[in-house]
Amino acid sequence: MPMKPKKPCKHPGCPRLTDGKYCEEHAKLHAGDRRSAAARGYDSAWRRERKKFLAEHPLCLKCFDEKKIVRATVVDHIKPHRGDMNLFWDRSNWQPLCKHHHDVKTMTEDRNILYPF
Image (cartoon, rainbow, N blue to C red; front, side, top):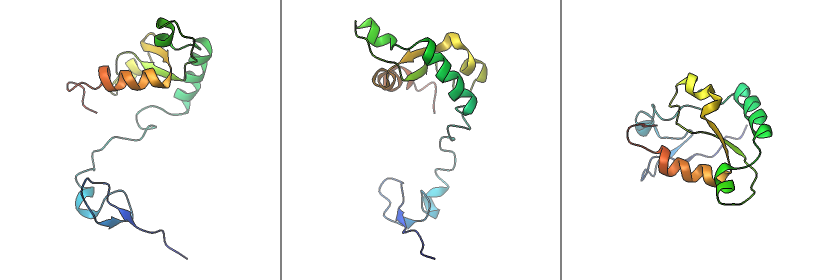
């Protein structure tokens, strides 16, 4: 049976080829990297509630403030939950956003040194 071709290690500047994401040397460095979406709470229960929330709140709040009508595609946590499941499921902490405004918010407001990923 043919094997998958090896690919370059994802560690910056490493030229080694590997079967996984990182070569043996760099795998140890990246062992604590971000958990999967499901492990962070974004599972089937989240998808179901997200779908309901977007049906109830179909417009992006930021676009609406800019006097534009754009469909919301993302349920954003106003205050980042950082693994706090009570805050994660608190609907008063949710807001409907389009992908553009969610990405802008995440890169500006949510990326805070006090809240490492």
